[in-house]
Amino acid sequence: MAVVSFLPPLLALAGAPLLLGVINRTKAVVAGRIGQPLLQVYFDLAKLLRKGAVYSRTTTWIFRAAPCVGLAAMLSAATLVPLGGGAAPVAFAGDLVLFAYLLGVSRVFTVLAALDTGSSFEGMGASREVTFSALAEPALLLALAALARQTGSLSLSAMYARIGVGWTTAAPAFALLAGALLLVFLTENSRIPIDDPTTHLELTMIHEVMVLDHGGPDLACILYGSALKLWLLGALLVGILVPIRSGSAGLDVAAAVGGLLTLAMLIGLIESSMARLRLTRVPQFLVGAGVMSAVALLLTLR
Image 1 (spheres, rainbow, N blue to C red):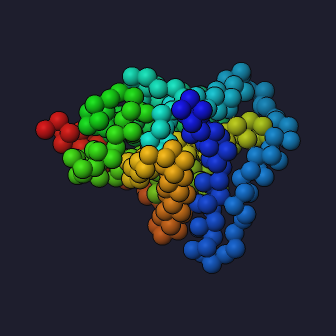
Image 2: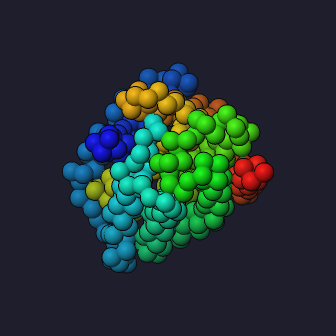
């Protein structure tokens, strides 16, 4: 069992960039294009690692440290998130709070690096990032609190091992939690309708504008960290929607990975069928996620 517990983080390390490839290929198919290879993100990471980095004289050590700190936070978070109902390598009561804090650490250093450049565009993106995260984080924490209440545990591994039983006793609450986590997933990963990761118009960027001055290995760390974040938050959502517990760890993990790939295709379909929201509408979108989480928590308290 100790060896099996290391499977979720290893799959995250190896497969996270593939989710971005599935999203891009889905969007290409919907648009009638051939699109880039599924493994293109891996090629991009390898190319960036071979390049050098250029640093402005106005930046400090924060700008150089931020990509490494952000990636380290995501690597640490990968050891906390279970996959397929099995226990994560690091599991203890309250690890759900540590998971949320690790996401916050990554965000804080990205924002500080953007501000460190002295660029007005990157400062604008940093302002939007912290504003929207202030609304997304409560929705995430309330959703995790509802799961903890329903499953009777404060550990992510124990919570997700009991998800299947929860669907039989509190299906409405779990449906609301899945909807709330989907909205948080789109927001935290800067996907449409919150942000467009492929845009080149600075006035509408949120996450991408904060990393404009990064290049080479630093940009590779940011891109890989973003892919890990996509995988980890997706694993939390898929753990609720695909609570398959067959008794075989291999089959359960395979079902979870299939759910992640399906989620990636769903994101591609969403981004192909709608435009991003106006910035003034994003707070309403996130408040809706918070309300869904709060209602789910109230339902579990009955």
